[in-house]
Image 1 (cartoon, rainbow, N blue to C red):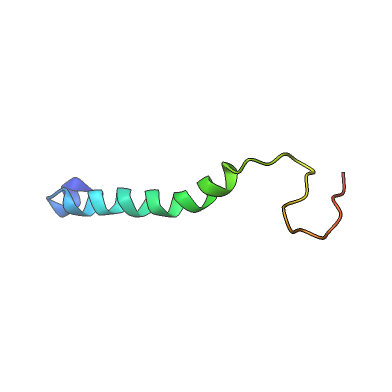
Image 2 (cartoon, rainbow, N blue to C red):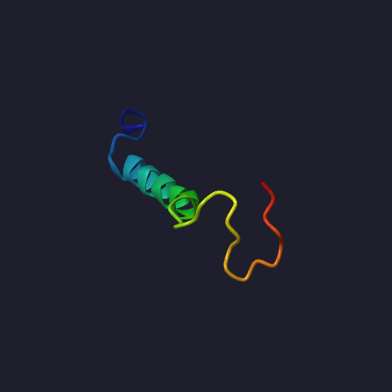
Length: 48
């Protein structure tokens, strides 16, 4: 990308954009939960 744009702005913006997008699943994956546990306020029954 650096060769195509002849600069570091576009590659830097791309890296930052991808990082921001990956924050969403990262926060979900980092939750303090276990498989099969109910979420706080979740009224559905957990099935195993």
